[in-house]
Image 1 (cartoon, rainbow, N blue to C red):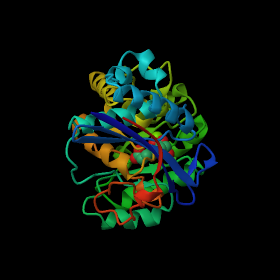
Image 2: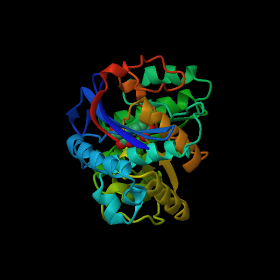
Image 3: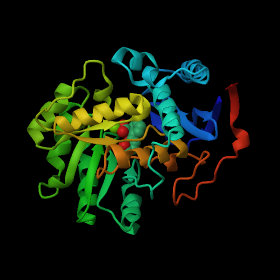
Length: 334
Ligand SMILES: O=C(O)CCC(=O)C1=CC=C[C@@H](O)[C@@H]1C(=O)O
Ligand SMILES: [Mg+2]
């Protein structure tokens, strides 16, 4: 006997969360719950405004259709990770959420481990250095750059690396630098510290400019937004060290698995990263990263952007759990 439930959630976002120039005050998404006999699986479907192609209403419509097909006995997994056209036709956030629910139902996700997340700095670097200093292990962190001018940010990065001699950094400019700003950033870096920048995600507005930056500066780059562009092909490229995989923006677990396998074959590191999911999605991404990208710390340090946790707690987080009563049931199918 199969049953499905689709629920809607809304969580407060702390002030200052700006996505693609849009100020976001809430994180809205869906939870899909699949039940069969005495087994249950849940998944989060949360298109990210400014990054996802699909809107939340479009995701809800696709999720409802596929949930009803599953309840009626169809094997939707083929829909979720079949050929490119099928996976692309079904909104990536829906494919990801439903495949998580199915994986939980089949007990295919590894158990909850002490969740790790590379600390993320998107604001005050002095506060961030204090936070890192207090951590038992501050070997790796991520810093958003491109928010001000390249010169000031290279001084900020120099300061962090000098303050913590064992620290390596992942940087992320979200394509905000011109070639000149990127060159100014590289020129401002202390040459003795530059080797501790593992990569910069999307430094420049175009992939060609980012490749030229990597060539000229010798600083490795990583593709994030580029991975999700139609003409992207995974192959070795001079200066490219990694790809960032955001499953909510990519699709089903099997699609992510294929992408990670292709990355490995191209000699690239694959990093699983948050799309600002709730604690439900983030804990599942943490469990997934143990299997899909073992030994590569995932970029999941976004829970603190939210005002509450949803259904499952992130280990160690003191953020309150939102009352399940605030979840709105959109539809049931049985
Ligand atoms: O990757 C991480 O360490 C955390 C997630 C993160 O940096 C992002 C999540 C969603 C959108 C962006 O703001 C940003 C990114 O571009 O990687
Ligand atoms: Mg990024």
